[in-house]
Image (cartoon, rainbow, N blue to C red):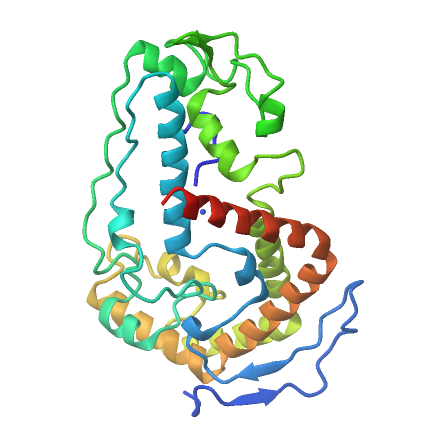
Length: 322
C-alpha cells in the first residue's frame, strides 16, 4: 500500500494445543480499565495458530501485495486517460505471494519457533534470497505532471491535493493535459484515493494498525506478562545470558546485529525459545494480547464495522479489475 504524498505511486510443556484457565486473574474485566480477565490460555501454542481479534481487520501479506497491485492498476488507468502507458513498478513481492502459509504473529513476542531458531537463529530473512528493488519507470516531463500533479522541479508538498476522492472533485490542480484537468495530486494520489479513500467517511488506513499497537503496548505492561517476562529473563540468566530484560533486546544485548544467523546467534536463539516454552510466555502473552484487543474492538465497534465494510469494498474493486 502507499499512503505517502511524496513516495507515491504513487510497517517445554506438553500438549501444544492443551488449554488451561488462569484462575483468579486480576482485573475488573470491564471496559473502563484494569487488567482484563483472560479466556483459555494455550500451552506453548505455535504463533501461526494464534488468532487475534484484530486479524479480522488486517490484510494478510498476500492481500497487502494484491492491494498494491490494484493500486498500481488504478494509477495505470488514470495515466491512460491522458494518453500515457504506465505499468508501474514490478515488485518481486508478487512472485512470493501465496508461496506458503503466513505466520503473521511470528515475532510478536520475539522469536518463538524452536525449529527456526535452531536453523537460522535470529535471521528473519533466511531463505528469502537477495532481491534488488526495481527502479521506478522513467517519466517524460508531461507524464510526470500527470503522475504527480505538479511540474518537474516544483517544491514538494506545495501542489493542491485532496485526502479523499470526494474532496478531489472540488480541488483544482491548476494543471491540464490532453485537454483534461489533471487530478489533484496526480494519478499517483488518485490511485490511492480510489482504493483507500473514496468517500469523506473513509476510515484512515492506519486506524486498525494503531489499535493493534495500542493493545500490544497495554499487554506489555500487564502484570501477567511482566511476570512471565521476568521468569523468562531468569531462565535466560541460568542459561548463560544474564541481564536481558526483554525478548526484544536479545540481539542487541548480545551484539548479534551483524551475525544474526551465525553459530553464536543460533545457540542463543535456541536458549531463548526454550526459556519461552519453559514459562509458557507465548501462551500467556497471547491470551493477554487477545483480551486487550477484544476490549478495543468493543470500544471502537462502530468505526471498525465501517472499516470492515470499506475493506470488503476494496476486495470487490480488486476482483472487478481482474
